[in-house]
Each structure stands twice: as C-alpha cells, then as structure tokens.
Amino acid sequence: MKTLKTIFAVVLTTTFLFTGCKKDKDEVEPDNNKNNYTYLDVTTKITSGKSLVATVVGVNTLSVVLTGEGTSKWIQLYFYIMGTIPTGSFVYLPNIDPRYNPTLHFTGGTINLDIASAHDLTSGTLNISKDGDNYTISLDGKTSRGSVKATYVGKITPQ
Image 1 (cartoon, rainbow, N blue to C red):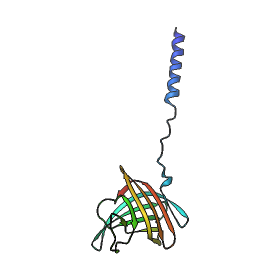
Image 2 (image 1 turned 45 degrees about the vertical axis):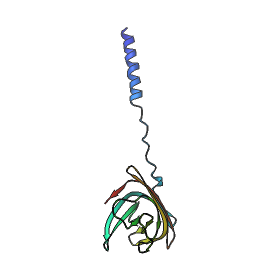
Image 3 (image 1 turned 45 degrees about the horizontal axis):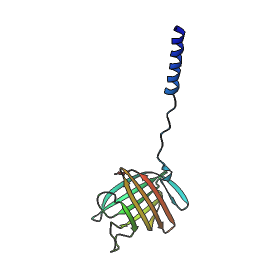
Image 4 (image 1 turned 90 degrees about the vertical axis):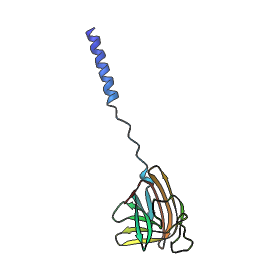
C-alpha cells in the first residue's frame, strides 16, 4: 500500500510539473509592420504618433506627427482647427484657399528626412479613424520630389 501511495504521488507530481511548467503561448503582438511610410523609394518604420496644438498668426493649428525610426524622420500633418484630432476623409488644400473647409481638408504636411531636409506636401488624401484609444491614419500624397504613402495604427499622444 505504501508503494502504491508513493507511485501515485510521483505520477501526480509529474503531471503537475508538465502541465504547470508548460510554456505559455506567446502573446500576440500587434502588427506594427503596417506602421510605416514610403518616400523616395525608402520605407521608414513609424514608431509613435503625437499631436501638437499651436497658435500661428492668431489662428489655432493642430498637427499630427508620425515619428519615424531614425534621427529626425517624421511626417507632420496640419489642420487649421482647435481641439481634438478630426476623423474622416480629407483632401489637401492650403488654408489660404477660400474654399478651405476644416471638415473636408487638411492644410498641409511635411516629410522630414533628416535634420536639414524636409519636403512639403503639394497634394494628397488623408483618412483618419478612431477606435477606442487607437487611431488609423493613411496618407497618399505628393511633394515636388515624389509620392509618399503612410499608414499608422496606434495611439496619438497629445504634447
């Protein structure tokens, strides 16, 4: 009887060890491969997003900055509005154009390649949606030097 209890205890202990020490399934990481922009045939990973509010010549401006991996790499998108990041579909139109409407247009953008090199958007479309705390941003634009495509899914932190 003592041997039977010992065997049972060993089997029970072994069972707990194998089930208790089994490696947990890896947590699924969000697909950050989509968080990037391509400009001048170079793809840069977007590491974060933030929003900035400033007053320029008496006009409130909001910008969304998508920070790229590397030194001084980012895309900055401009709206002549105050408050929160707008959602919807927007077409590039400078705010000096009398047809400019902040519910339909974004007023500009800059693609920063490094400390001394930035290119302004000259046309494009921008889509922004929000689900919970996460934004989905897609940009299809042009500068005087070429096309830019950007996609970002994640939080936008106010600065």
